[in-house]
Amino acid sequence: MRRPSILALADGTFFEGEAFGHLPEDGISTGEFVFNTALSGYQEVITDPSYAGQIVTFTYPHIGNYGVTPLDDEALRPWCRGIVVRELSDVPSNWRSVGPLEGFMRQHRLAGIMGIDTRRLTRHLRAHGALPGAFGHADATLVLDAARVALGTDNTDFVSSVSTRVPYERGAGEFHVVAFDYGIKTTMVQQLGARFRVTVVPSSTGAEEVRALRPDGVFLSNGPGDPAALGANCGVIKELVGSVPIFGICLGHQLLASALGASTFKLPFGHHGSNHPVKDLRTERIEITAQNHNYAVTPDSLERGVVSHINLNDGVIEGIASSDNRCFSVQYHPEAGPGPHDARYLFNRFEALLRTGKLENF
Image 1 (cartoon, helix red, strand yellow):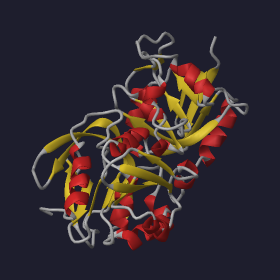
Image 2 (cartoon, rainbow, N blue to C red):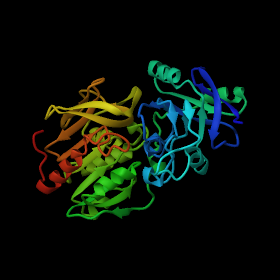
Image 3 (spheres, rainbow, N blue to C red):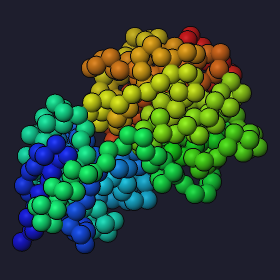
Image 4 (cartoon, rainbow, N blue to C red):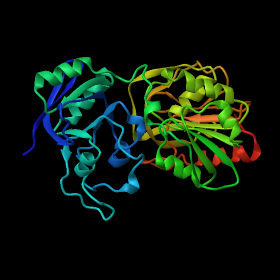
């Protein structure tokens, strides 16, 4: 018998459901509610550090049906504040599965609420934007009170909490790449390690420390939260721009754009899913992409460089490039864990940049 649970948003909207996963002692979990439209890959989503500070609503109605496996972890543990599902599968069926999703959540002290009308919740977030709130099995009055004072992700540095504390190396190759860990996904490290010798460094690493490692290139990873709250990180990138080739993804894209003079803004409900169409303005090729971000680069704010990719759903800037400064970045996830592999050519583009020293046709 599951315990009754309620979900409340800061605007007073509430839903009734049942608690599952970890049951916190105070009976309440708080965060910013967002929704993800991917049809599979719930474990990768839950363990993506980019969701730090957020509660993930899965629009796909049946979650947990293929269990969990360590092979799908994108980090050592989940960083989101909780998950919301319509229906939880208690009996997973897949040859890769080592256990059920709920057991994984209990192990990592991650709370969830099930039995929610996720279509109604998603429509509300689409209409009103990502909203802070709370859920849990505590008294309804306490959950509602917690929702009213819950915080979103604006002006908050989540990167320092998810980044590695010590450098580590992966892969082997002709070129050495220093990768800033702003919340780097395991799949991203794997893609880089298949091509380069990679030194992953903490987000707080300074420009001189990077130069001391004598890299052939620098990689800026994905990560959570508001890029405008990361002035120090942006300052380091400003020092490196022009002196070494740079490739950025997601938050790394926003920080590189900021270093090139652009500003950022918060999208109403963000891009979270695995089916976003993006156009490469150089080749006019359309890519289906995986995305997970709440912030984007402000149109016409880029002072150095050009826009290279756009989102065909809403026109949001999805990529930038600067030939003079030998750097480029994309807002979406070419490593795609989970999601399509249409954009993995971007890792090859980075390798070509390191090999030739030129970013051509921009």
